[in-house]
Image (cartoon, rainbow over all chains, first blue to last red; front, side):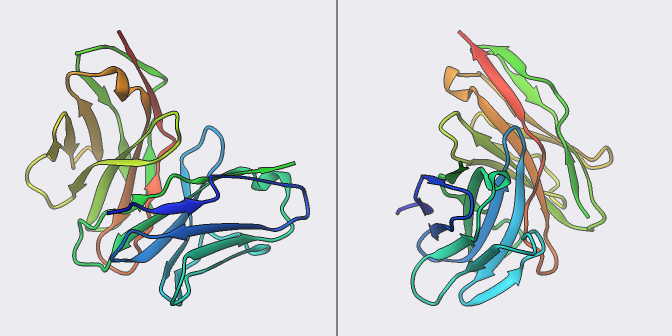
Length: 116
Length: 116
């Protein structure tokens, strides 16, 4: 039973380029969350998606960032025109259909984005 | 709004001894869940233990237990019989249980080093 998969694990981009981060949730999980971790910091929520729907994007920067979770395929976090401040670790987490209060978010290994 | 506070400096513990990692929180939600995650140097986020605000007993999971004091708004993680592999960053997190808001709020983390 594979865990949450993220690729690439490491991504290097130059300023102004686009970054596309992919996340495949655990089998049977239909809820996906993206978090960002800056150096020496805890994780900060960005966006919560279910299949074909954005449920909560209150943590997403207003510009350059977008996320999707299509009916088929992985969830994608897209960062356009990257800047050095976007350098961080981006984590995806998934949880099953909500059954009750103990549903846990399981995290992928993260994508380390470095902007040169 | 929810807030997690982890203020301990880097913690050190001798192998095979027990250690307590502190976490205090603040929330206006009537029901909430508290989580601890481990982040080793490899970077992944590993779920350790969960405590519901309505649970009468403290959660335990193998060598991990949670010292939950609701009135003091604290949810300290206790690791018994420390092992070298326990050296990592540890994050306390919480989320509300009621409503559609499922995002986790994280603290800044505590570094634990286990000495042989």
